[in-house]
Amino acid sequence: MWFIQPKQDYFSQMPWKHVHESAVINWQIRARNYNVFLANALFYVLTIVCAVAAYLSSFVGVSLLSNFLIGGGMFIFLMLINMSMTHQTAILVYRFTEKNAEVCSWKPKMDTVKPFLKWSAIILMPIVGVLILMEPSLLIASFGPLAMGLAAWMMGSSKGYQEMARGSRYEEINWAKTEQIKVWRKRSIISLTYQWKPFKRNSSYRPRTHLIYCLPEELEERIQFFKSHLPDAEYEEGKVDIL
Image (cartoon, rainbow, N blue to C red):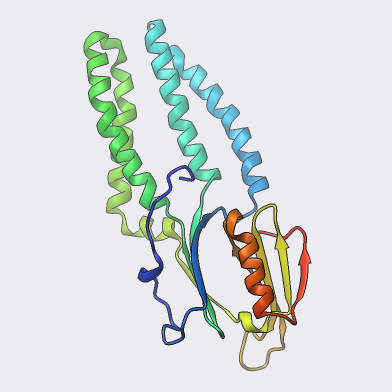
């Protein structure tokens, strides 16, 4: 979930291959490493759907209080699902040496959604229990916390789901051969383009581009770093294509 920010230094935990080479610079960032325009558009459409579904579900109650609790709870629950689909983020950890660069990335959804659902269920169940004692018609409201607890248990017990949800990736960047540096300040992204051979035999060189994500407050520092280490590379600013 984009709004839960884990405070942890992941650098020492990464499976770096070039540990024998001294790091020139390294950093980690949490970013939405995809085309956010399409994701944001989908978010607004699904928000309308969530609002309509919550409004219709509110008629299940038998009183104004039960209508409000059921409708409001349904809207919050659906919006959490909506945001988990449209606002997924990845944690990217970079390590640059003089010759090589490595990046490890994964989606931390598994690390954040599971405890969120678990503690939400733990906190909400006593509250819902008290409300049911006050008004038995609110029994249906207990399905929300129960569903959250069940979802957290399933996410924690399914190893296959954990691997799929994490989407872990490791990449090497031959950044010393960079021919073009392009900066998109709007999203604090630096793209490095160089020539590479996808196969050692029977293949020709072709352009390869790596997107480097930076914190907005560190973008200028990263630009100066690449400019100083890649003086012969062409520098350009503008929009960068993101899949």
